[in-house]
Image (tube, rainbow, N blue to C red; front, side, top):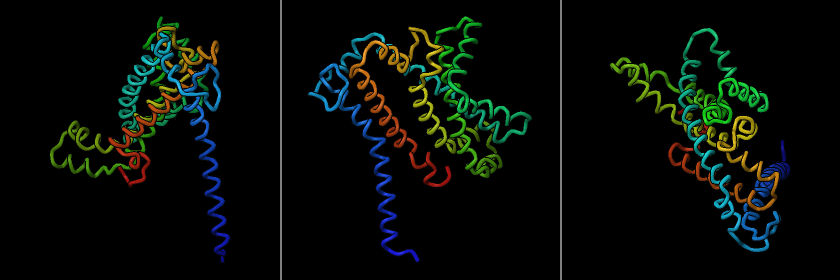
Length: 272
């Protein structure tokens, strides 16, 4: 039999490892947040005081203002299109019987394994042939393609866990396909859609590699603007942008938890 002391030290060791990993992942974030309030132009820690200088610097620079606007606009539009496409594809792949549906699924999920450089170059070639280089349409298409795998997978999980007997019961009671979709299927897919929205927004806001190829000066998203900025300057402005990203992500997760429930999204409360 395993002795009590062995079990105690095993739990202690596992707890110590978990705490060490948590600190390892958290400390860089804490350093970045504190560095963003440094009054000096050197990106160091600990800060030599407290100042909002670098946050005001974001508002004073037109490229940063435009970058935030473009990032939000592209993120929201690409998320909207990816949700629409994800719902349709999930229903077709899960319940359809047409040939090639597995191939379609593999193609849609390919951005997860293909290097972003390849996708970026391919989209740039397409844009150059259609005259859309650097325009918002090609940027939105690029972001939609990059976030669609996460959306599709999230919705597929909800669809696989859904009780189809509810739809059959609604059909027996006289509900037409549209009513069954609106009042039965769509609410049951809510956890997957919520997770898809969260993943899509986070991935779109942080998308850099493909955006570097398809954006122009007027359509640059924040990661591209930040990359260009760091080529000339290294100051706490970078930390200020990172802090805004961190706070925005926390707020998005909190809102999603209030509206949908993180536990449901992570499948901690049974089936959707």
